Length: 140
Image (cartoon, rainbow, N blue to C red; front, side, top):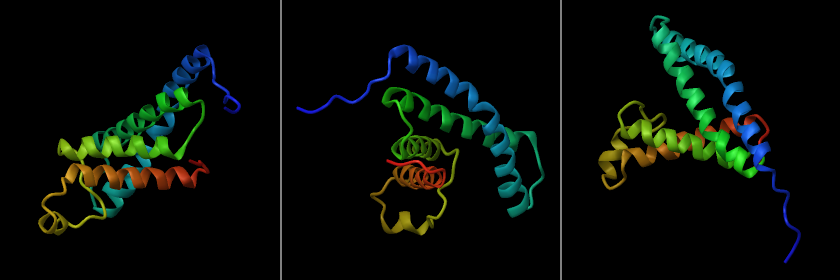
């Protein structure tokens, strides 16, 4: 039936998962500050705030933390992990009214009332996550 693929040990998976969760803290904080500065302050003329920085940082950390178990289970990084994590967070964020849907005009939902906004949010944020993952050299 073919050659079995390499399967990492459960000890390796646990170690990878714990390292992944801890190592994601600092980069999320830095990128959260950059995103807050660019989007809220520079584009919309807002004021820098700890709340804005914290919101972006927390979102990025949760995004990264959502990918960690997928990578630990499969034993490698993948663009699919990025897409699933971004899609899950986009769906949940739009469903709860915490996030808007970028690149989609509100008239879309009047023309297509059968399409739930949360699904569109999941697709859009999943696509954004796949794009950013591909910029870092990840493959499917």
